Image 1 (tube, rainbow, N blue to C red):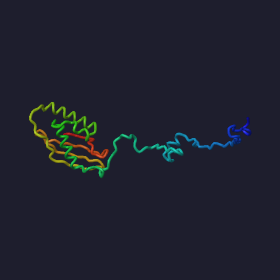
Image 2: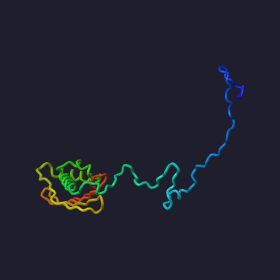
Image 3: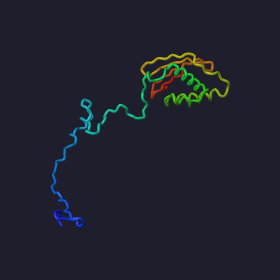
Length: 182
């Protein structure tokens, strides 16, 4: 049977004729022009982009989980925090407070330094009676936006000592990144 004479036996209708005419169309050229690696990474020209996908050759942030600097206007006032953190640091290094209480407010290097100092001071002083460490005076300055440098005069165990540290605004809070104890 051919397509022209095909009949539906149940209804007696003639089936429509099948079209065998095909048209051949040229595939459009959508491939990007070939470029060299030097042209792709060239800073003078705009970075190479595809039609649907833009490639960012110079991302603003290298690591998604890295700490992000915070401006001073987005942070709490530094004076009250400096006074509290200075008192806490002095109590840690004299063995009156556990070092783990400062872990949230210090960088890993500062925390390890303070924890080591606390361990040494508790071994040296033992369980004898101690006077509470007191912060007498605090001075601070802001050398850059989101950075505070502070120093404190401290009296601990009958000795006058100096404490200097640097706070940086990271992830919306103050973080102690440097400390020097005299």
